[in-house]
Length: 398
Image: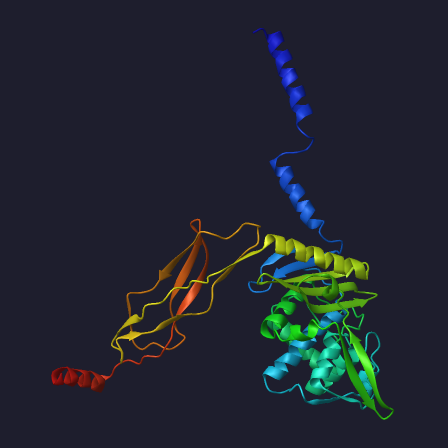
């Protein structure tokens, strides 16, 4: 073939390749398009989607920029309230008195009067359902004496949770101080803490409407609490959690939804309007449920007792630390799971109930996806000299 013919053929190959290949499409660009599609899920400038059990972040956009959270602040207030209940410092039927300062709160409120009393559980409903600033301050004062003392506890608790980009200056989020801030990631983090440690919160946050009764010197009157989270009525599986809005914060939301054993937390900050925050949260949740598949080990299998040396007993019963669960977040189905127990042949006494004895490892297609601790189910003390004498004597008697 002459050089001229080769040049003509090469030219036609290049032309056909340009015509038949869509402009700008290659393996790398296809991945970019997928990323762009994911990022276009939300309009808000900051958002995080987190799975509750593992804390896996499935989606994030600008997760660590500090922004004003508005009433999302009340999630931390609720954590401290339920901490107090767990520690026995507060009971649901305790009487809470509204101070003049608490009554003076503006913004979202349930119109508590100075001197008005309500049960702690009613105050919790006022905070969770209607986002009552007055109820939040009344609870803060009851638990810590002053709102500021309560806020100090809020910041301490946030630090313990690893909320590195969070600082509170009030307990309700009404402030527009630049020193009151958090992030989309930190909101997801504290939301996870609240619903994981105190799942009973969801019985309150899933209520759409409920009446309370104001009893004051003026008499008694009913007041209807209406939930500020509109997703409860429009998104299947939504069970809470908290909305927030101020002129500085714009429109924020922490939404929790449950489907097929999976619980997701969608955090949205600084949406331009109320509809956008709900639409963004719904889009995040839809994305998460489409990507997530949960594997639960329903066939754990029996555990043989551990053989013991030098113990009061020759063996100790074993138990699993819990149930193994693995969350696939890439849209693939977790199947063909293999399990491998890693345990010594025997162990020297003493052993304590709850002490780790070994692990069960889980593999998918040869890749390790997690482990589950195997624990001692009983305490077995080390045998002493007199114990050994007793055994020897018993052997001879038999």
